Length: 286
Picture 1 (cartoon, rainbow, N blue to C red):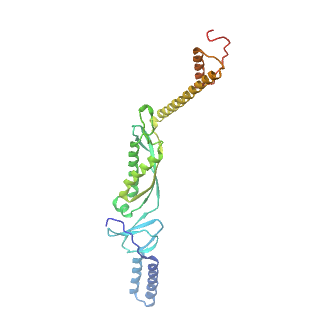
Picture 2 (cartoon, one colour):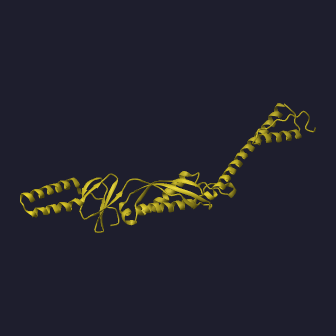
Picture 3 (cartoon, rainbow, N blue to C red):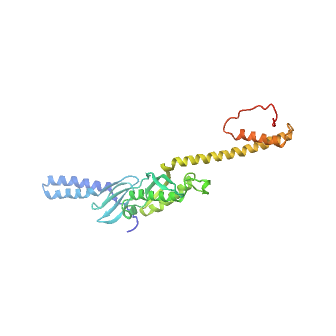
């Protein structure tokens, strides 16, 4: 037997009625007939009692007889089975697993802290019970291994100065990374009959020893990008100003005056502080 076998045992309510009837009958006959032989029926009742099984919704019972797999009960209700069966309870409900924060290296070798949130449930009770030693511990260990592998496949973020141009990163590509993680974990847990319902990164950050340096780096990158936009806008505004002044013939500027005007406008538009106006009562040459 290598596959899961679903069985439906005898109705527990019927056997409960029979056991109760035998119990009452044995007590009555023992005292009425005054024959101790009828007391043996009590022994039969106590042998029957261990065979009763209550299966709640989204639970199962794996049945064994002296080491031999008999089958799995998945339908909820009250049942009666062979009293000598060994009954192992396995929950079929969805379970959450929040992994510990692991320190791993991303694709660029930067140490990062990462954890995952996994939603899983048992799909094949035979594999969960017999193909692995402890399926709950198996889920934890294989999830950690999958997270370590995932972190080494992608960089934490893109940095232009390293010539890195990745379409998928751990920080920005949440959906793509989650799909890859879910597929990786599902392949690892299939041997234990585990179905992965969802897998997502729960925590992601640089490791403490490089967190401050990377924060400064990100800030510097943001400042450079902002300055680049400011300069582009300033050049466009200066160009528009010179064009409008020439078109409307408000003032006739020679090359020297244009250069001075461009310089002043660029300083005002690109500066990070408010400009202080200076009145020039002379000429540019005096």
